Amino acid sequence: MVTSQGAPHILLAFTLVLAAPPLPLAARHSESICLFPERWQGTWFQSGVRLPITILLNRFSTKGRCIASKEDKFLIANENGNCFRCVSIHEVHENVLQYKETFCSPVDSLSLCSQITGDALLYSMFRQNAIALPCPFTGYHTFFYNRGHGECNTLASTMEPCTQDSRLLLRYQACPDVSGSESAVEELQCLATWKEGSSRYLVGKIEHGHVTSNEDRYRCFVYDKIPPSSGSGDGEGNVAYRVAQSGDATCNGLFSPMEGSRTMTLYKASSPSRCKFPSWVSNPGHWHTLDHRRSYSLRHRNSTLRIADSDGREETRVQCSEVKGPLPAIPGSSPSDNMQIVGHYTVGCQSGYVCMVFYKRDQHVIEVQSGTFTRRFEEACNKSNFDRFRAPFVTLVTTSPDLKSCPHSGRFAVTGIHRHVREERSTDNTAITGTRGGNDEEEILSQIQDCPLETVALSSACSERDTMEVRSECDIKRIVSAYRCHAGWIENGTGYVIMTPVGRSGTSGAGAGAGRRYCFIYTSPGGATSLSSPSSQSATGHVVRFSTSADTCSRTVIPGSTGVLAFNITHQGMCVETSGGSALTMQTAGSIVCLSILCLQFGRVFR
Ligand SMILES: *[C@@H]1O[C@H](CO)[C@@H](O)[C@H](O)[C@H]1NC(C)=O
Ligand SMILES: *[C@@H]1O[C@H](CO)[C@@H](O)[C@H](O)[C@H]1NC(C)=O
Ligand SMILES: *[C@@H]1O[C@H](CO)[C@@H](O)[C@H](O)[C@H]1NC(C)=O
Ligand SMILES: *[C@@H]1O[C@H](CO)[C@@H](O)[C@H](O)[C@H]1NC(C)=O
Image 1 (cartoon, protein in one colour):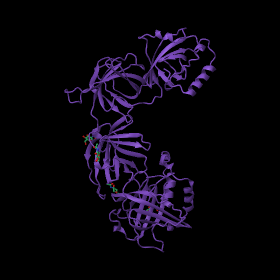
Image 2 (image 1 turned 180 degrees about the vertical axis):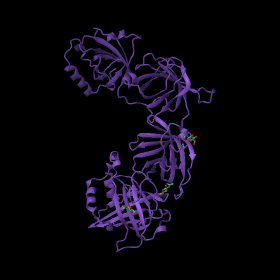
Image 3 (image 1 turned 60 degrees about the horizontal axis):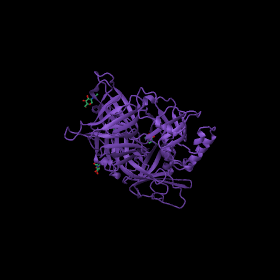
Image 4 (image 1 turned 90 degrees about the vertical axis):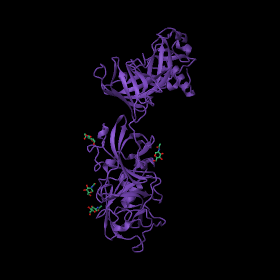
């Protein structure tokens, strides 16, 4: 069956055929060019064949050249042109070819094919570097298995899904009284499935500690699905699948799911997800970190949280396993809904339990604390695995959080700025820095870096209640930077507020670094002031210490000292007061270089 003969393909084949030394017998067939289907091209594994088999144009690397074909029959001449075989190749799946063949013969015509008998050995070839496909067994199963010495059913073995649906994890339990049973963990990657008669087949690759070669890796399975028998039982204990596994890297001798090197009986098991995440987590349904490097989405009726990287690849799946309830509030903190949950996590094929606490900061801002991973559900929230005073926080926002009043309304002098280059981000930060503007920012930064602090002023919640501005007049340049404020909260006397830098043109972050947010962390003597009463500490001269954090509202940052950017500001008065006629309102004179010292500092730090 030669189906895909593009014109360039034929040309290539001609060159190939003509370039080969003229073979007396093959010459008669040269008018009927025989090419293997294009989709078979590539390298293949066959058990017992040491080198990978390559199929390309008219070549079948281990057998020779095709000189004639009819439907699925191919007449193949060996390299010397003195031996011919008819090979009948059947594509059972794009990743699996099966064939039967004749012995070597001097007969150079397709009539040879009649010598292929029904009981001829069937060979299977598995595509190397095949793209894996979803496994036929989804969800959680328990199973009993038999390796020919009786069924191991004292303890249930388990089959668990991995984060990719093309992988499964099998945990075999040992049975003391059944020889050949042993506890083992195997990962199965599914590569092909097909149906033949009433049987369903699966080809997969197995990985475990003792696998060293493809002969150990490729296995063939035959299985059938047994629908839950109506009337008997409650549905949970019903047989779901019978599976037989080959003992080698072939599909030979696999005729029924009842016989094989290893047979298994799979039963549907209950999923570890038994609850839903709080409605204030599931209502927006989609969250991301301040730097957009991770997204958190609710799935499966709000019972599963899918954590993916910026390319959308699933990294961790967390299923709600038990809602433990809210934790008591920390003194000196804003009132806030929170919920402690035991989650069942899956990372790749690893799984277990983790204690998590979700905090509602606002409708559009939440935080998550997670403990260490453990295999045992009962221990997930024990002190040894989860300490709420040490577990890091991940701050999550929706794509368009509400604007809120900025804290500390008034005018401030900036009395110190520190910038900390964060080395730990240098290796994995390439994804988001690529969008930042070019070297002109660096250049302007170096021009204004010498600006004396006296020229830098900050105003918060003045021209707009939700805007914080930093401006500097240095030489002839006026530099303005603005931030829009979102939700904020106070925890143990330290304030946190989510900020969005406003772009050069005044549009909110469109273009470069779109949607990027920062967490501003601040304290003032006597504790951070309440956000809702910004004027409660408006005494002139009080100092507010600020730090910024780019990925999360870090609890280890010391405001004014550590963090990406640390700065101290001293209160100078109310917004309405003016100093020397330069009102603290947004001015846009024609050729103002509208870039701020802070923006530039950020640009530098994150480059
Ligand atoms: C998930 O939660 C949201 C918000 O609570 C709700 O509107 C939605 O109906 C829920 N979906 C399901 C399938 O329960
Ligand atoms: C973990 O906590 C549970 C319940 O609080 C307790 O029964 C169990 O003994 C603890 N385990 C360890 C190892 O501390
Ligand atoms: C801010 O003030 C604190 C306390 O006075 C000081 O330790 C810190 O170095 C100051 N930070 C800056 C950036 O000047
Ligand atoms: C609150 O902050 C103080 C110091 O600022 C610290 O010693 C204390 O452990 C914190 N308490 C909590 C509950 O985090």
